[in-house]
Length: 439
Ligand code: SF4
Ligand code: SF4
Image (cartoon, rainbow, N blue to C red; front, side, top):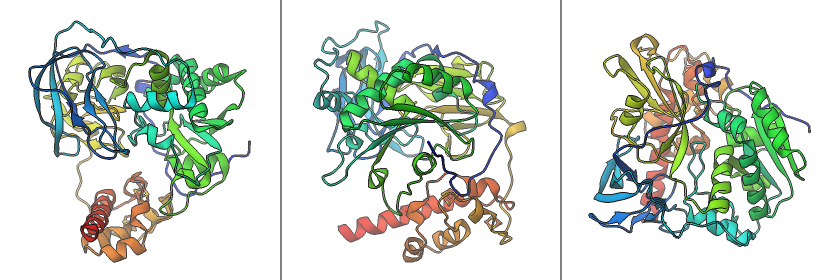
């Protein structure tokens, strides 16, 4: 297969050595979980349980509301102690459900494998299991499996690039459970009606490439490709370009170039949903950073607070200066340790003062490095100016909505300007203006 190099990007130190050889372990399930009804892109799920009700593991507690939404299930058995708002990593509060864990780990009796495994049954199982993109994008997977009329999908791409520094959860999954990921790919191919799947993995992960090639051997239509280690290789558009040479148009989606991209963790969740009927109630989270005594990759139940995770892996909060949910390039700083782990939490990083660079942004020196680094070809410094001026028309002319928030511009900026925050602000202005026009 001919591989292509996407423009721009950066090459930050990866710090993966802290956790990449640490095998996946299960984290103790907490006494209390707080499960947000918004763990996905789209409309919030609606609570279908009440305070005081006993629930079983895997029981539906939040019903999908509309097509672009995802179901939410009880990650433990126990009693619902509140249906109220829970803290979210964005700093907002979102509707959620609190469950007091009874420690019995009692699964809901209606959870069973899918039989027979037809295209329709796979899509229904993915939808019922509340599966969303686990690379962090959290787009409901059943939506990607049902492209609109006229969009012909010819290729499934499994994203095993894991280009964010520190994160190794996908790497460990591919090394330890490659067969499960490949079985998930086969179900996804069946659901999409495609005969070809390419798995893209960065070339700094030879053990994952070998494990996935071994698991894919003999599976017709599945290839495992090693792609260049260069951030953001794991961005959907960048991976599609690297593997196919096709460019997703401005404002477009992968399906516009005949592709559907799924994260390897999502594929594993699909295999679980089809083969056991179990919904998405836990995920692998990389917990790393210099403040962490036992860095590693942990299976964590959705709804576990970040504070509980940090306590379990030995973080002295007195010495901890910063906590990030996700990776350092695209993740968000956590201001409240009560924020729960969700289906999209790929990492939790905790740093001491020694690793936290606190500096004031300096004026832009017009060096142009941010534009060179931008993998989309945007002009980040112009977008920052337009966002601060609240110039919505200008933001649209300069394609602010195409920004993938990869952080390359801010990483490379010698003046340490907070470019991504500014562009996010600008994108929010575009969304608000469109909404106001609709109403
Ligand atoms: S403008 Fe957006 S897409 Fe471009 S480098 Fe900055 S964050 Fe990434
Ligand atoms: S990299 Fe920073 S200093 Fe250079 S042009 Fe962009 S915003 Fe300005």
